[in-house]
Length: 87
Image (cartoon, rainbow, N blue to C red; front, side, top):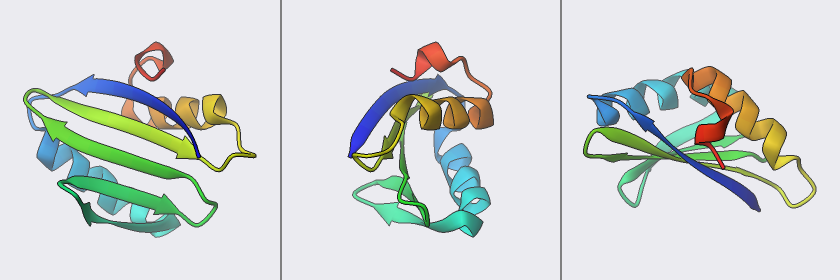
């Protein structure tokens, strides 16, 4: 997997991660794993959301033959953050 990482400041990271998991679950599955929300898309991409104090840590991964920058842009757009925040 090829992965891009980012961080999104938010006052309620746990709640936001849960809402995103619920929203994106219709395109695959979402659940709690190792203290984070993990969304697994049917197309093979994975988003991991870890709530930390005042922020949401993001890991956006694609299969080895995927385009991590394109998927990072999709995730950044959905979260409403600049792509520069996911590197």
